[in-house]
Image (tube, rainbow, N blue to C red; front, side):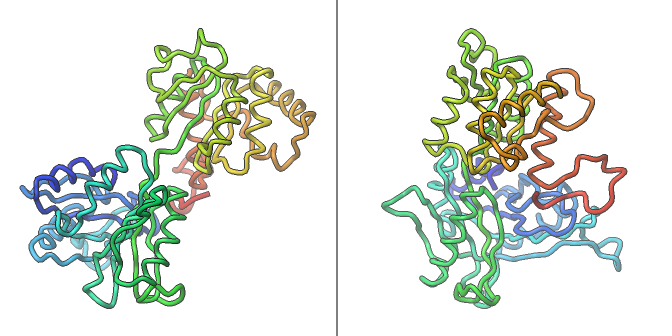
Length: 378
């Protein structure tokens, strides 16, 4: 929903009713992830996408119907072998789309949620998408773990359901994952009957780029493109300037290991954070990697350098006391083997390695690989 939130908010503020169709579950090779949304605006406008074009027409028609009736619908779209003209995904995937009417009455908290998202405050929205009691479909709770005064608002229909879903949704928010959760009809941990979709609007994950070199500028650009909050850090003020790194969200002048230690102690480094160590200078990267590889939660630690530099770096890290388990977390030389030469090509290879590790891809050519195209986590 994040990508269509500005348009949705504008119509909501104007008092209009909007149909919101959101992917809540995917199977096999569905092209869009859970949370992808499409709007049907008050003037018939279509905004966003749930499938990259395969089922948008059907969702558009369903959205118009939902706005008219006010009744939310959970619809599954897949491949039909029996009818060549049936609505489905040509990629062979299956997806569930939840379509609901959103206006000031049905979602009074939307303005506050949008404000949280705009200001990088973590917020989760949990919505009942299926229940034996139709009156409970569409009910939602909003969760703000950082708000001690009011950590949640709204209700799914019972205190038991609210408590169970809130606990699980906070976990999804910490990981930055959208997901559909299944419970008994009143929130029991066992059984089925109630399905709840959780939008986890976590702040953007961080990419920390160490080494203010030309390769860092290219990595910062692609990191920003991929949705990371990018920080470039270098101890040399003559090189670490915003003019040299306009794509970075922030440029920090500090010793890399000192900066990383301070960020970790402040709680600003988590399991979604990726580190790109581009200094290939032992006086910078060895102390930095000593800190990084001992941190319990990081999504990726990559270090640039030749194979000779890599071997020398490993020797120094072992002398510093790091063991095999810690060194196995290091991606070095950094990136996938794409034959990259320029800074931009190298940035693509680094981004490709980060994506492959995140989703469990192998990095081989799809035309020569077998099995599903889309992976579901590494």
